[in-house]
Length: 338
Image (tube, rainbow, N blue to C red; front, side):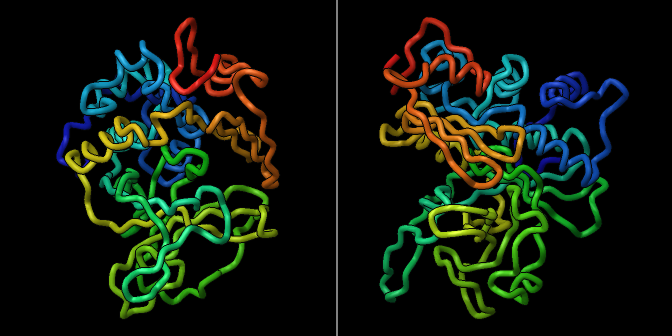
């Protein structure tokens, strides 16, 4: 079941079509709700379904996918967009539909929200900070405008819960992340080493204080999880864990997402309304992201290469089609010079 107070149901036929959309064969029956299945579902979803915002930028896409309240978030509309029309979307769209899939397969899904660490997605070591009234340095963070999923039940190990997220742009986790108990994480050293294979994208959670990079202690208030990614190379050297977003296990529901979705898809200063923002893994351990007129490829070693997109650079429509499976023919794309 999905504990989010909305109708998230998909029919058996729709579940099979969704699994086929993400490259999984269900002709011999639905997969069991195990950790192995959850891992495969998330990995396949991230590789097969692009993170993208073209519905806000292309007139015919807007007509199908957008209302005055923002992008459509009801499951039937999302199914038609992602599965039938083979499009992608952003967090509220992709994680809403993924929650419906997981629920239909027998997992227990709770919906939550996260605060994104600004500039954390750039994988730098010195985030933007401000100083609060007590003189403490704090991260600049968004409001709770990123949707996440907490998955348990089914045939998962008893008592375990996992963070699942298929809609976080260039740093979308490619696997579910175990959510250990608070006391276990408090007992861990601040930096408990690199992942088993430091040449690949790896994710973990740490326990911390909302808005600060320091580890939490038992007396802190506003404690919760930070999702971290292993950045194996960058401007600050080789090997470090980077905070991406902060969240607690507090439940969030449709009204929360309606407000956040309206802001991200309708506010003129939102990054999603200014031009194409698309991302997907390259299938070889790296990521390809189109943002701010740049197509950036970060390989499995952490080395980035960027090329301009638009006049004097790569053709926009060709990049969207060949790299992100988004086909725009004969229409303007807001925020792009074609």
